[in-house]
Image 1 (cartoon, one colour):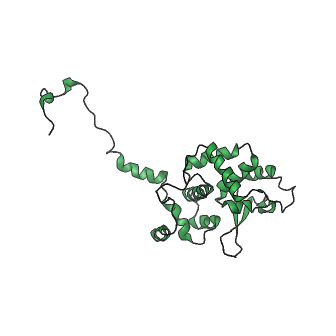
Image 2 (spheres, rainbow, N blue to C red; image 1 turned 90 degrees about the vertical axis):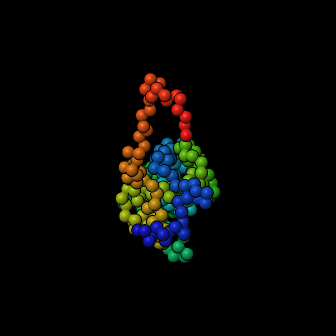
Length: 224
């Protein structure tokens, strides 16, 4: 595990050059997903939800067609776009609720199977996702992006106990070292362990506030 962390450190990071995080926290991810479910534009909402629940890239989502969603087995077939000519398809399971929403909004099962689910450009889709981020009150920063959702998916999967090799496959990483980046994000378990060190050290001492509790000559003593 340590070797993986060292290997990935030189190539990718969860932080920008100035030290700001590039991933959504669990609370931010939850708020974003909630905002996406309630988005007035249902097609925008389904795009946001698909990225949040698969960790796919915007371009991979925009390339999806009606046949990409398997309604019987409840998964999405994503074609990896960073494979230098190789055809690699990732099958990622989806929640039943999202399958139902996709079916209604995009009329799956009734439209032509080759129909694109979203017809926006990458730049337009990026802006629409950003608007949902704002609606979810996600603070500004490098994490307030679709890439921030991808990182958040990786972290959430690892913390949920998904085996790292499966997370690697879902995200389409060529190297396990790239996926290992998500092992370093601080979580509730790490904070709980750290809290054990603070218990006896962070309790402020009790101070006397009444002058009659001080020694008689306390007022005449000089601080040295």
